[in-house]
Structure formats: C-alpha cells, structure tokens
Image (spheres, rainbow, N blue to C red):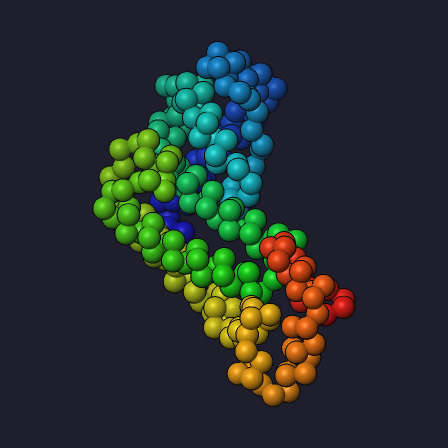
Length: 227
C-alpha cells in the first residue's frame, strides 16, 4: 500500500479513537448521529491499520461520514479527515471487493479448484478496475464516484501493485493443473485420460446415485467418503 493510502487509514483510526476516547465524546457523537438521522451511531474501536480491512468497517465509516465531519468541525483532525476523503472512499470500495473474495475462499464448500477460479477471476477484475478508473469510469467504485477524485493515476498504480503482488503470492495455485476429469467426471471421455484411472472413473460414471448428487451445484462428490 502506498504511503498516502496508509496515511488515510491512519486518519480513520485517529478519528474513531478520538470519538470514543471517553464516555462524553462517545455520547456526543451518538447524539450527532441521531440528529443526522443515521441508522446507527456506534463504530468498532480499532487501533491498528490491519484491522480496517476486516468486515465492513470502512463501509460503516463512510455511512457515518457526515456525522464525523460535523463532530470534528473546526478541528485539525477534522481537516485531516477532509483532506483524505478521496483516499478513504476509494479504500472503502476496494476493501469491499477484498472482503467479497475472502468470503468466497472461506466458504464451507471451498476447495483448491474453486479457490483458483475465484482468485483468477479477481485478478482479471483488478485489470478491469484499473482500466476503468484510468478512464474515470467509477461504476465499480460507488463510494469513489461520490467525490471528485483527482487521484486516478495513484489508484491505478495501487491496483497494479495489488495485481502483481497477488500473482506472486498465489503463483503455485494459479499454475496448478486441474485435470478435466476432476472438473467434469461424468462427461469426460475415459479413453482420453490416464489408463490407471480408467477403472475407478468408469465405476463413478456408472453410479447413478452419485451422478444425481452432482446435479446439485452445492454438492462436491470429491469430498464424500464413498468417493
């Protein structure tokens, strides 16, 4: 992460910690939220940047943006927050996409095959995001679209850095060869695969019960004891 984006997250930490530093400030901030018609007036206290990427923390912070700005009006911290508005809104969007990928990878039925597919798809999306932001098309970044951003080049560089870093980190997974009989065991031509697999694959293809189970998209036959 670039220094300026890291600084933006640090400002978010300072703002949240300031608003909850004592019971009086916490109470006053909740009153601000009520006056602004916010659906909620509390936000989790965080003290480290790495935690900001978890859950929907920044998304909630953006929802309460106007309340934070009003609460910190005419203060140095409030000025720092406004100065980092574009970066905070951009990070809220990109973290939401990271969290969506994380949920896919942590699903109960997730395996190496689905993980490879999810990450490969995400890498292609990163390239699309970069190209769109370069053209100032913010359809995939609704928070950033709400502000007049002059930092498109910076965000494109960040997306490119993410893309390169992820490719390095998961190169073993992306380079993993998945035999076609693993993906479509009931449709592959047995004669076209390794001879040592002919007999067991023929047995699976002849198993009508197992074939019926595979029709359920949530069912993975390779995770069952009988297979």
